[in-house]
Every structure is written in C-alpha cells, then in structure tokens.
Image (tube, rainbow, N blue to C red; front, top):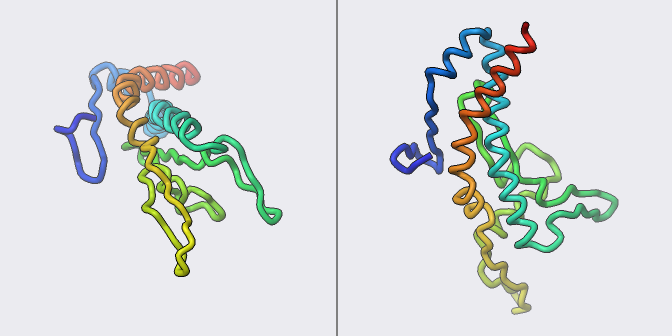
Length: 167
C-alpha cells in the first residue's frame, strides 16, 4: 500500500508472494478460492477497523455505548465503521459512511474525523464547534503496514484451512 502504487481515491494496491499462494490455490476450485481470499482480506482489513474503533472511543465520549431516542435504539457509534469485501474478492475497504443502512448514525463520523467550523443560528445563538480528531486517518497510517504484512499469512492460512476441510 505504498504511494507508488497509488491508484486514485485513497485506494492502494498490495502485492504478495504469488508463487506459494498460487501453488495452494491449484488445490481448490474457483468458489473455494474466492471464499479463502475473501476471508483473508476481511481478517486483514479488520485490523484497521479495530484501531479506528479504539481511536474513536478515545476521542469521542460515549462512542462505545448505544443510545435510544423516541423509542428507537441506535447501536454504538464505533460499530458504524463499515468493512466491505468486494464480491469478486479483488479487494476490501473500510468506510466511515455506509449509505445502505436506514437509521444509521454514521454520518456523524465524518464530523469527528475532519471537524466542523463554528456554527450559529440565524439569531446568533452559538451551536459550537467539533474539533477534528482524525481517528480514522491515524488508524490507517498506524495499521496499514501491519494489515499488508498479515495479508499474505491470512491468505495462506485460509487456503490451507479450506483445503484441509476438503480432504
């Protein structure tokens, strides 16, 4: 995930030692191989998500607790950090905003990440400011190398696990 492999909108490419992985993949059919790679990607990307959750909890009070309002209960804000593995197992991502969930409070995460300017009503009543905590970008910077290094190990582990089940 170095910058020389930068592909656009905060996307990175990771390359692994393909010889050992390809050797193990020959034992599996396409569906099993896709499942193995997807589970390995998920394990690796969860490292970044977990660090982002820890950073959010330390930066924002009550981010680890759920809440309810008018009879509607909301899950903890730290659980709104979304992990997605692509269907074709070509990659994975961690998002702050998941637009698919109705009633999600994930829209607030971007305020805590990048902060807000001072706000006031039309009559001049002060509504405050949210200071940027950069919990997500700090998590990506700190755990990116660890996630990359664990990816190859996770791929090999998940392939061998599925191959052993097949026997």
